[in-house]
Structure formats: C-alpha cells, structure tokens
Length: 311
Length: 311
Image (tube, rainbow over the protein chains, first blue to last red):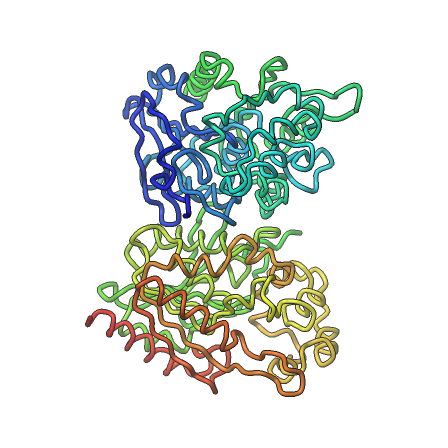
C-alpha cells in the first residue's frame, strides 16, 4: 500500500504542543503549524532534510512573541505528502510560493536550515514578486550540494547515501540496524563522529522519505538550480549564519555543511545584488542552531528583523 | 552581452495585430496577449517548442467570440525571459500557475501544443486547487519525450538536437546555413521530409532559445516529471487530439509526436482518473492543428467547452 499521505502513515506520528494543520496545494498536502501574533511580521520556518516542523518546537514560544510564525513540513517530511520522483528544489520552492499565497497571504520573512536554507535562498531569488521580505540561510550547503562542486558531499560517505541505501525509497527497505552497523565504515570519518544513530528508528527519520536522500546523491535535488545563478538573482536582504566548518587534517576533506571558500563565494554574489547582507560565523555551532541553541536562534532572528525595520 | 530579456533582443521581433503585454512573475517576465470577452470562460493557450504566442494569431478572432483568451510565450520563447539552465516542465508549469494567479485570476481552460501539451497535462494534474477547469492536449509527446521511453525521439535525429547543435544555447553559434545543410543527413528521414528549413532564420526560430532543445535531448526538460504518475493525478476533464502518426515502413520507426500505443496508454490512465475524457484522432493533421487549420482548432475547442458546460 502506498504511504504517500500522512493518514497512510498514521502510526508514525507523535503528539505535539502546537496544533497541526493541512493545506491542499494541488500536487501536495502540506502540514504546518501557525503560532504567534497576526499583527507581527510573518516568519516562515523551513526545516532541514530529515527534520520536521517540530525541529523548531523549542524556539516557537520565543519567536511567537515577535512574529506570526509558520513552521512547515516540506514534501517528503513529517505529515506532508511523499512524492516519489519529484524531490527537486524547484518543486519544493514552488510549494512554498503556493503556501505563502494561500496560507500566509502577506509578505514574509523566511528562514531555512541546510537544504531548507537553499530553499530559503531559492525563495529570495525566485518567489513571486512581493512575497519575501528577507531571508535567513541557516548553514546552507550552497555549491557543495551541487554535483559539479568539488566538495560535493552527497555521494558515498554522505548520510544521504547511507539513509537511502539502508532505508530505501519510502522506507521500502527499512534496515535500521544494518544502517547503524554500516555507519562507522560507510560515513566519512568526521561525519561518523557527528552522526550518532540510536538503536531504534528516531522519530524524525521515521517521518522522512529517504528517496530525498537519493535525489540528493543523484544530483536531481539541485539539478535544475545553479546556485551561483540563483544567488545573483536574490532580491531581498539576507542573513547567512555559518556554523562549524573546517578541514579534517588527516584527510584534507572539508567538514561542515559549507566551506569557508564557498561561503565567501556566496557572500560575494549576495553583496553583488546590492541588497543588505549580514554574515555571522558561529564556528562552534553544530549544523542546526535552532535545535542546539533555540534561544540564540530566536534572538538572532528577532534582532536581525528589528535591524531591517530600523533602517 | 546577455540576451535574456526581450529588450536585449529587440531587433528580433516583428509587429502583431494584438497588443502584447508583460507580467513580472518573480523569476521570469512572461509576454502574452489578452483578447475576447471577460464574461466568457477564460482560455489559456500554450505554444509548442519553437513557437511563440502568435502561432495562435489566426485562431484568436474565432476563439475571442467564445472565450477570454490568453496566449503566452513560455520561458525561452518569444518575448519572455530566456533562463539558461532552467528549462524544465516543472518550472514552466509553475510559471503558468503564477500567470493564472496574477493575470487571469479565475478558473481557466488550458490548451497546449506538443511540449505545451505536456504542460497542459502538468497543469491538469499539479496546478493550484481550482485553477483549471479542463485541459486540451494538442498532439502531446507523452511518454515519448521521456528519456526512458523506447520511442524517445529527442536524441540524434531529432530536430531538438539539430537546432541546439547548429544554433547553440542562446543562439551562441547561430550557424543557420550549416543547420540547413546538415538537416537532410542528420534528421530522421521522415522528419527531414516534414521539416523544411528556409534559407534565412525563420521568425519563430529567432524568438526561440535553442538551449530548450538541449534540455529536451539531455532529458532535463521532463527529468523530474514522470508522465504516467502525472496523468494518474489529473483532476479535470481532458480533450486529447491526436494527429498524424504511424510507423515508417522502411525503418520501423514511429513517426509523429505520439504513437498509437502511447496514446492508448495515456487514454487508460486518464480514464482511470474518473474525469471525462474525450479523444479525437486526426490522422491527416500535421503536428499543429491551430497553425494548419485554425478554424477546425477553434471549432473543436468551442464545441468541447460547450459540451462540458452542458453536462
């Protein structure tokens, strides 16, 4: 039986402190929560790959004092539709264009982590006119997630390859213990130290369609979306928070979601658009600031948003 | 100098009998004409590859009596933006979702030729809820334009390959006479008889970005869009007009945009959706009914639309 819609996977989910809602977008049904004050600026939160909206759960109460916050599950995440063969950054961006039109219905600040950070960049370049006020890219794998990039990490050694190999498209394999056993030898050494796999399937991974991992490795996720071209088309102010990164001494391999060189390349392109550009380096922060330090994440967005309005 | 926007290519265009307009969609500017009665049903016309909106010019006066007609240039066509690296059916479909939202602003009947017919199918499956009333697919290369299909024609021997090879992305090569000389030996024999290349660049080809041809051949045009899955998701009544097709006796090669077998496959999927499905075989009609017989094309749409309303 297909498990493409959340009711087909109802055994997967757990309760949360915020009310979940669903919107029919045409191709997919998107799950989201909406909290905060409608008189405050709208803020759209875009999770990273293998995360669901509730990755932001700890930050939501702090953010809700300053924004009306919308946290979504993308296609392939959480309670949103799974879409075999159709995991591309362009489709995910277009889903959010529709979401802003139909649900938020006013100009919006966006913040996304990792793949969601690339979607935040996509929206800042390609959304409908007037939809986006400003965009936060939280540790986004710009360039590095394009197949042509020399630091391309979405191949053997990456978690995306591991997840898809052992869990399968739509969890058709589901060999969690095989994945756990393989991780130390199949992941890049630096990643094997970061990614700790529990004995039982974790809640976030149960809510994730591992086909998205395959799309990442095969290059179709970013396939039609050249990052340099996209960044040169950005139309709004951008905040780039850059977390842990560096070179692994033993292997010479880049560690982290985006290298210093690629961050610099993004910075030059973004400054070249003529829009305000803020860059923050957080060298000891893990990949997800909103998970690791929700207070700092919230404060960062609140202060940046206030600074934009004060100009 | 880039020639991505129509003002960069202003020397390319010729006057037309209808007023052209432009709408900014975020990533692209779309050129279109709008004619007819706003109290009649909205009709969106989607040209085929290497065509511009004015391929419908002869049909517009007839259609304008029964519809409010919107004829567009897609990205890579006519006066709309050229978008290197970003010619995908998903992006083209999403452009029209935005166009319907921002310009038409009400439920719409769509009709598209060839690649435009596949986009018509895309809209009938994946548009925003409520945008599409019904869809006409005019001789659409369903399945055959997917790389995995055995009758895939978008490779050496196809016009798409020829155009891109001799004209180049964004016309960077522009060797029209070389293309004309090569056509008899490089095109499939049956196509070489159909496609007559004039001595000077034709108006429609001057308005076309040949990179779209490369995207067709490399499979990226349809890459993320499985046709069987798309057709199984169609939500509205469909009219499929199927034109000249058959097997070339000497080579056993399928001729025409879509074979009898692939038309049958589409038919089964569309009937399976439970929506009304009309099929018309026009075995002696060339690929574009709206160009070859605009009166029949107009009458066909008018009568089908009336029949839908009469149910």
